[in-house]
Every structure is written in structure tokens, then in C-alpha cells.
Length: 419
Ligand code: NDP
Image 1 (cartoon, rainbow, N blue to C red):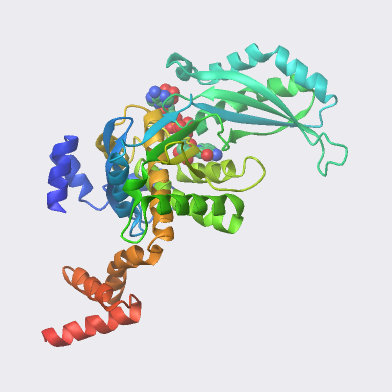
Image 2 (image 1 turned 60 degrees about the horizontal axis):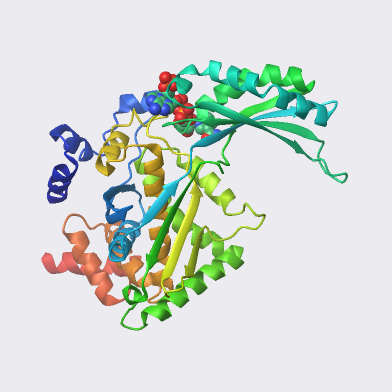
């Protein structure tokens, strides 16, 4: 640990205080925690590790990951090393447009109401920006509106309603609070223009206008294992993707693997991972069918091509990012300069994690690597501490019986021998 911290301090130019914060169990003080949430009684810690070897858009990155599950960090680091050999990952992100919704019910004439709103577009945008003027000064702010009429079909189960969307460029913030402030500000005008009753005024977490995409292209020789040729691994990987794209039972597990990486990166960055989770799964069902978040295909040269696009409502400011000392530090470690750059890193980690999981599944099976890493947790649950954790974990792996009763008996044997 000390050696790792020393290398990291050198790499990311960390101060003594920052290194001390990393070593002090999360660095968040009880006082800060008490200001962040209600009825605070303590701090729940998670391990913070480093995703290594990432080459993204020709730039090297070390990506901090906060996760309790063994194997996630090892898997993404190993995949990043493999993909680095193929020129690294490429990633891009769209402009950042968050959506605020205003729900209007009991509208006397929906078409007329929609046209009134469209006529008053500029005024509505101006009002929204007046409610949070600093955003516009930074080059962002409300930029457009859209009107949607719901439950129009004759057999609709629910009553018709009008929904106004306010599109907001939230710049470096995720923007939930900013957008909520804006939609609340324009709601009285929306009620007046439509003649209806305004009910909900809230951000939509389905941020399909703020997405990031990661790609990789891997030549078959890099995929070969002792048992399978590169072409065989490639084709088996594509078949695994096709399974997830066709079957919800597989898709959810496939996507959980993607989110193993995504959530770990989002949590480490101090962002709202519930927002990212909710948006990601909805995006995987955007055509009315829940399928694979990733896409794996073969190109004309026979290379394996991977792609992941996800909504990525993350910020470099706002929420608890400027409050949580580790969120500040992880930003410094990645060296990112913008929320768009952060969103690219996160989708790359998701794509890498998906590749690692399906490659293991189509070759050795997931348990070989996973259980070897899980062995450490079993050793700790059995009561091993310090260097004994790795000794018992090693014996568990060698025994081929990686379970808790074996861990108990190995620890007992070891203790008896020692005494
Ligand atoms: P904040 O309310 O913290 O607003 C962002 C802050 O960052 C503002 O104070 C803004 O300053 C400041 N800022 C500094 N520099 C910039 C910049 N370059 N660009 C943009 N802002 C800048 O956070 P958000 O509005 O981002 O809301 C995120 C929080 O809202 C998260 O904690 C989330 O969990 C929570 N939330 C989520 C909801 C959901 O997902 N449905 C609903 C409600 C809340 P200034 O004030 O001067 O503009």
C-alpha cells in the first residue's frame, strides 16, 4: 500500500495531506457527513482502487474505482492493458443537455396549448435563465423547449396530459438542482399559457441528450488463449453479446457487469450513481425492448469491435463533489478537465468491464478468476488478519475448494500448527 501511494503521489503530484487523506479511511469527517445527510451516525467506507493501463483518445489515464466486489479492478486493468496493445479506447461525449419536465393536466385544448407554448419559447427560456443566471454567464443555461402530448390514443388507459420539456446546458454540473429551480420558476407561466393545472416540475433522469460513447477495436491475435484461437474467442464474444441482445434474463446480468465498472467510477468521482444507474437501464430499453448496453461486432478486417453508449449525467462540480475530499482527489488523479472528459472515462470502464466478463465466460468461465480473488474475502470472514489473509487465500485456491467451511478449517489447521 505504501509503495502504491508513493508511486501515485509522484504520478498525480499529490501533496502529503492528500496522501494522508487517502490513507485515512475515506477522509470524510463525521462533521462533514453530518452536514451532508440527516440523522448521520457514522461513515460507511468502500475500498478505493486504481484502474490501470487505460489509453483513451491517445492519453494515459489512471482511473480511481470505489467498489467492494473483488475482481472488478483487476478485470478492467487487465482489459485496458490488452486494448492498449490495439491502440487503446476511443471515446466521445455529446453536448450536455439535461431535461426538466413540467406536467400539465386538465388542459382544455392540447393542440392550442402546445402552440401557445411554442409561440412563447423565447420568453420561457428567458424566465428559466433568470431563475439561475450564473449558468448562462458560464456559457450554458436553458437552450430550448419541447412539448409532448401523452395518452392521445383513443384507448389510452390514463387521461391525456401535456408535458413541457426544458432543455438545459448545465455545463460542469450534473444540474439536477439547477434544472429543478428553472422548471419551478416557469411553471406559473406554463399554467397560464396552457390553461391547465401544473403538477410535477422536476428533472428527467432519462438524459438521452447527454450521452457518452466508448469504442475499441481488437485484432484477433490479442484475443487468443491457450485453448482458443483469437477468431474463436472473437466469435464466442459476439455470440455472448447476441445472447444478451436477445434475452432479458441474460441482458440484465450482462448489463450488471457493465455497471460494475460504471458505478465504481461514478462513486469514486463523487457523482450521483443512482441517476446514472436509472438512466443506463432505461437507455438499454429505449426501443421498447430491454437489451444489451454494449454492442460487439466484427469489422471487414476481422477485428472485434466493441461499443458502449450510455447517458452520463455526471459533473465535476455540484452535489457533494466539492465537499467530499476523496471526490476532489480522484479528479486530480484522473487529471480530467471537464465533465465530458469524465463521462468518457466512465463509459470506457463500463466497456472494459463488460469485455472482461464475457471473455471469461466464453473461455475459462467466470469462477476461475473470480473465486481466486473471492478467496481473500472468505479468509477474512473466517477470521484471518494481516499476512494470514493471503496465506489462507492461497491455500484455498490451491485446494480447489473455495468456500467458507474450507477457509474455517484451513485457518484452524494453520493456528494449531503455529501453536
Ligand atoms: P448543485 O445544486 O450543487 O449546483 C451546482 C453548483 O456548482 C452550483 O452552485 C454552481 O454555482 C456550481 N458551479 C461552479 N462552477 C460551475 C460550472 N462550471 N458549471 C456549472 N456549475 C458550476 O448541483 P446540481 O444542480 O448539479 O445537482 C446535483 C445534485 O442534485 C446531486 O447531489 C443529485 O444527487 C441531486 N439531485 C438529483 C435529483 C435526480 O437525479 N432526480 C433530484 C434532485 C437533486 P452557481 O450556483 O453559481 O451556478
